[in-house]
Length: 267
Ligand SMILES: Nc1ncnc2c1ncn2[C@@H]1O[C@H](COP(=O)(O)OP(=O)(O)OP(=O)(O)O)[C@@H](O)[C@H]1O
Ligand SMILES: [Mg+2]
Image 1 (cartoon, rainbow, N blue to C red):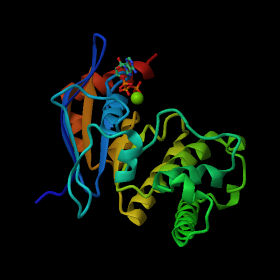
Image 2: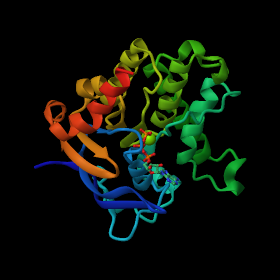
Image 3: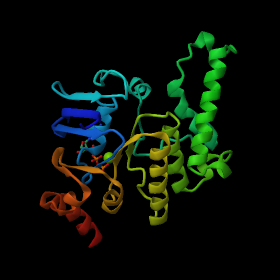
Image 4: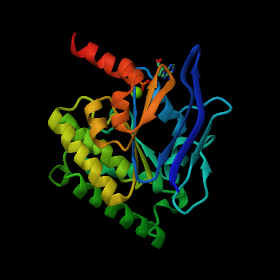
């Protein structure tokens, strides 16, 4: 029997006359690496925004999160912060780091999702508050080790190379300890070496922290090497899904996606 962590049905998002996602349905297996690909403007980020509560899909859409051992949650209607608390974390396509703050502070931001601290309680050294603080520190230290950030932990993020900044952004969502991690082009703009390193870190995080990964990625080579399952969007429509090998052979995918890549390469 398959074990599904996320299912979405007929997800439709409309911006004026543009149907950015047109009745997209799919399922993500627990523990897998699910890749969402497609040309620019295909609707990839919009789908993630709909799932994570940033955009409100049209009536008839469904998004169900099935946390391990807990009741299924219908995510529609929840605010983004509520969805992160349920265990679904996501990154944004553009770096959303605090460039003037150091690495540790940026990682700690990811933990705020766990802070239910009422303001009244905030300043007191209650046993609960201390316990939470210790849990936060332990989570951050784990991320620092996992992502090899020990040497730069006190550096302002703005002084670090772009590839390291993308890693910190990844670390910040890891610090939330989500069950489902959604990454929007975590390797955009990276060199081949930086991408290789990032792939290793994604694997390490998945193995160590027992997470499911939903990855938006432009680089077909990356997707082919790491995805268990691939879904392909084009102009707001799902045009294909299956194994990476099957997608590579699929005529619609080649036409829509590889076609544009080849065209871009031959410029
Ligand atoms: N907030 C918005 N308001 C209006 N139109 C939008 C908005 N967000 C996205 N769109 C439009 O929806 C379509 C899908 O955009 P989306 O950002 O989801 O594509 P994408 O597949 O993530 O592309 P990219 O690879 O460039 O990141 C595009 O036509 C885009 O212009
Ligand atoms: Mg996008």
